[in-house]
Image (cartoon, rainbow over all chains, first blue to last red; front, side, top):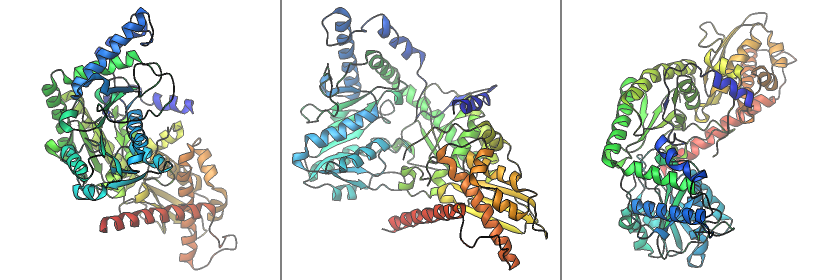
Length: 407
Length: 167
């Protein structure tokens, strides 16, 4: 199998330009972040932060200062409200399972939106085995939560509601304050969690202002290293730890703290918030150029998700009709343009993106969708190049499709 | 809802980039379709079968992934010039998979669908003729059953979706 991949990679030789737009699934880590991290592997703070020696105390100091910074960026009250986890997947697992288990005596109902990320959906599936039931609240054609249905879904038994601040696939920004108000009106005891991974670094996120009990953020979603994220747990909110092991500086997550990754995540946050307005304006400009270009160049395309300021500035999601998404991602890759698709061509019965289906897209529209996210590092030339190669790539795939696959 | 790595072979990549016998066939006398756009997986074969029951010309169109395109393309090369009986008996999904240098297991269904579409075309040819030869089995073969199953599942899913919309 590795041999196959070597041949695939060889087919990518002599690319004249490469533009990475698959920032939903992994990102480049900028040099400034790497430079910040590297000394923590061998020069300083490489000790275990719970031990009584200089490298240990250095690590302790570093982790506490990082937690302090992240808590400031999130608008948390105290640094103890931040728990570093190995990523958003783990943070969401901790939030949902931890809150459910710690509060089971109050009820066994959970409410989420229909378009929560896969990890939230899978955790709620797992929680069934522990006696919890989950109601999925529908969204409209732009991905906005049906607040009436949310109100209906919450009752005295509801222990937890979880709604992502920004949807990871279509970028729609939920009215979190309003949703939280509705939930707490029905049941003040219900904990409110938001996965803010796709909002953090793109729009202001202030957990005290939002009044959420729990919030997830992820490092790689803001061009930090993979393998690190954080869960905000409001002071006084009961959450059980979900893994057993040696407890160190964090009472909700066992194991030895990964100081270099924590440093990288913190540096990536600093870079995102330094010149925040300009960063966001640039990201938006690149995204808009990309979207306007595609909608202008290609016939039979549909923009997915909310528009304007109800959408995060980096997300572009477009359905290209009569074009199968996996085939298109390969065709684009051979031209040095890297995107992902909502076509789930990896199962026997190929179920496409649950998010696109939830907003009412036909299956074929979801199979032909591409997801792209711009960053502050993209240039006008990058986007121009994408707009240059995309039409011919789409036309070639549409040429293979012919009249087949038109439903 | 999970992803799997898809390390396609060189042959799959080659056929994806340069598919053989692509497009409609103007003088086709049999056209068969398998799959469903809802699955993101659909193949159309166009065939010209002559009076000696030989597949003189064949072409395809594919709405699907790289594996779907590659298997459809290789099938056209494998059965072009064959008597329909040989095409029926010799071209199995396993052979198709071998011919493209192997497929990730989640993509086996692409080869199955392509062969299912060929078998459908051959049945259709004899239906149009009004007589079936003795070697043609009455019961559906594995590939035909699988193609049907995939289509039925897609329809069920689409129906469920429509029902949800109407609610």
